[in-house]
Length: 360
Image (cartoon, rainbow, N blue to C red; front, side):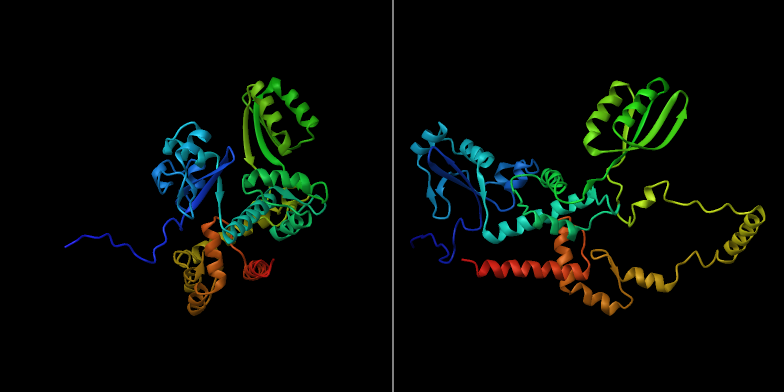
């Protein structure tokens, strides 16, 4: 009985791969990698080369399965060691992606850049932060193009400088605490006045003075070097004054808030007596939350940050496109969208797909 090698007829080899291409000495060299591993290897997350390369083989055309000739490898790289050449192609080569995959990556990075800009800027005229939809509209107005080979943070900082040329937009100041000896405080205050910083508070104890102030992000390095030279202690309290849940910027302005008038002595004593009575009366009820709050907490979707009164609505929500869309955003570590924003985002994606299908 003869033994024959049986292979599946419908199997296509080297198709579900990520191709990295490098052009050198007028010749093209390609390697076959596993999908979604090239960027992880370049960023240092993946260390095992075997988890990245499908085979330690250099091709001239991966899709057709054409191997690179040894004389071409020696002429281009000075060696015919396949593993060394694969490493060089993996480091310096260009990752080839499909059209829809490239569009998805660019759209995701576009949103990431807009999110970073939103967190780091505000409108100096209204003293309020911009929304992410407003930032995206401004980016389209100046015809901003995403560079897939550059980091989102670097592009966001460059974008802020470009937006400042056309629109009223300003970087959020840093809130910093500096502790220094008393003899160094006059020089520190002079520097803060030179940098036009806003001093929030001053506290002194045991020969040291602690100053909390707001500083422009562009002066961070100069301030840090100055504090190090005077042997002080430097601490960044907040990178942005607009944290989650803030709806107004004026709450950080000490002059804006009006302090309520102090209560009279008799009024304070009366309020304390009422508080003691209420605490005694409600001590049993506070030990267990009411069933309405328990039901509302049980029917809350943490992905979309929304609560439902009815369990049926809660189950139907998990089958909706809104929840599915936010789940995809959660895997990319993006904030959730409201139902209206989700519909607008999906319509934008559908319109892009339609334009791509009918483009020439």
